[in-house]
Image (tube, rainbow, N blue to C red; front, side, top):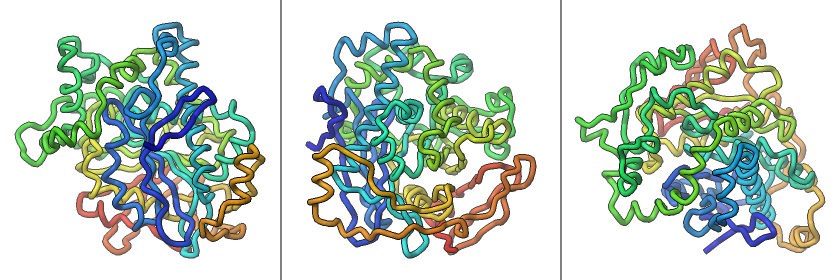
Length: 453
């Protein structure tokens, strides 16, 4: 069972690894962080697509989930303490995640971010948070300044992007709509023995929201988005049955850990919401650490209301009130997709191809291969004695010409074209300061963004 140490106390995180893809081209690593109840096993169907995209996929299990170190009673006491203790607890989860990334980079000699000979992104590491999995990543970014300088530099060489996949309210510390949106974890009428099943069917359902929500998403007011959200799943169509119904008991058991979720993860939902709010603000608005890291918000049009609202909140702020100097945020929409990440064969390739596109390269002006920072002697020996992985080291390459030309003027049009490439149809919204893509059912698989200079 592969585990990674995340401190000097014996704490470890279990992970599953697709392995390095064959070939000599520097590959991109995508680390996947799960949400509530459904652990890293939920991402396993993605692994079959990794090699064809020259990618390495790594799915971790958070603390208290199968294979990872459970929390001690003293650690869990912090969740029932005051805000300061709660904030420290959540910050520690982010630091554990950072240490996992650092360990994995060094242990497997991951190639740093670069450009391939095809002018695509190559090397480096992206991290995807699904649902509540976004919370520890936000915490990692918010707490990055306390990491040792060597750790920050190492991660800066590798971190490419943070994919915020269908984030719920808790990701941003939104607590003023609990009475307007159905949330099974807050439903007191559900007996404890039925909580896991109720949550699982709710989160894997399909929801038909108002057409207004889809057509004017980031322009809606709070009242309009709440009025357009449907809290009841579709129950009259075989096509839109909850994903969980298509899974066998064996399949469900392989990707869930309700006991682990009960021990700590559910309790994390009840802490002071301003802890998550402040983490998200620091993570997204302050790019002092890892300034080249880009953020991609992916929202699903048939997901549960809490994630539609959470995605709307970020998309609206990005469009109307995003301050200068904040991290760049791309907003992407997946049509006809629910929240549940079981069926990847349709839209996984969209995400993987996007990660390799020139548009996804950091806007810091170069794709660079920096010298690795000073690290402990064990790691120095590993990198000096270990045979080469075969990854081609690229020279410092100017990439400004590879990036689309977008105006930074928030009041002006920033999109500049509609593009048709193969079977892909990508429309740049000219009214938004970020690039927003609506991915139709017809084009999900063929979403090709491998644009060359």
